[in-house]
Length: 483
Image (cartoon, rainbow, N blue to C red; front, side, top):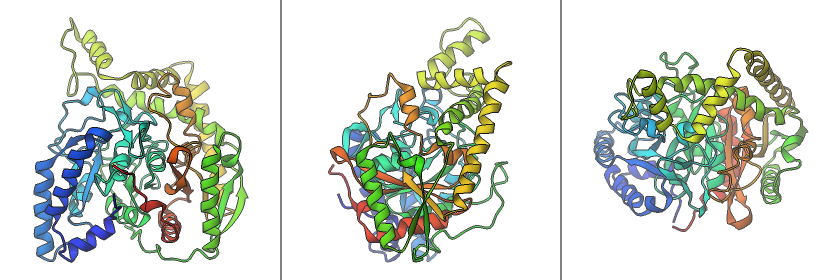
């Protein structure tokens, strides 16, 4: 398979070397051939995609096209999409057809993109593997016996497998960056509030943030430019000027200071991951950057803090799914209370129930101060760690995950081990910072390795610049699995 970037496709469309309909039909055909193996899509909207492609072709013919007009994409299946199933990977929403578009969906529609369908994920974005209990596990295109990461594993696998050139994901604790790393693609989580959460079904409202996943940093910059923007319907959306995230892509790295947290390179980091990340750092030094050691002393506390705060918010957000207004309703019950109980018991998987129970417990009387307030205090300490570190450097770099993708089912009986795999990504969400994953090599069993770049608030353009310059000097982002 040959990797074709969004930028290249857009140029071909603008030059009329290919039509959006032809492009869309090609990708739909590849989905038909490949999805049975990879299981990246929950829903394929063939009719809607072809209609959108025809509309894009008319815009191109009329000279009204933008940089993304006619380019096929896919949305993670927790972005509400008008007239299309929005399941959140759950039996609870297995029959929910959204009556409206999420802000991200409408922004990308306005940009002229063509939505091919909705991608598979961990149920309600709760997980790190996309081993979905209702729709089946997403398989890693580099080795179908391994996980694609999560929770945006379907989007990552679809891009890596060439089923779509780009997709949307969400990142609550690493759910864009980790699957991007596991599948050898590029993904960015912007600063909290840059991308509206309206129509993005909530997991943990103070942590969730949408972002793009694609092969290249340049593609992510183009997509983020379309996705970002103020939305008055989201109280956490930031009212700030729109940015051109491509503006600094070609900026030289001379003088760039990269911070390397000592906590990210200690015990627990697999040798194959360490080797690839260190080689990437050496390449960045060749490009003019310098590195300096920094410290994020509360890194280990990000895991307990996150797994108190996120389940607490989830227990509140998921209380709306009760079988009354929409979603799954049990077929046999004797009264309202039993309908609630049975509908939620049948509609939610074990992992979702586990997080609801944890969240309800830490918010309960007598435990709120002991757990939830303490976790919020740790969150502040973690954010302060990042500010001190970023005072000594321009960006922070390190591994995305301690290991490469593991075998499907390996952590099914050990959720705590799965939670520990997020140690390098959780702090970024707790602090609300932008972070991204860049492919930097391959580890044992030829599995991709990703390097994480972290910036200060609103430093997305700088992160994309560093990633783009690295990708101009290397070809890891152009490697593709054989399918």
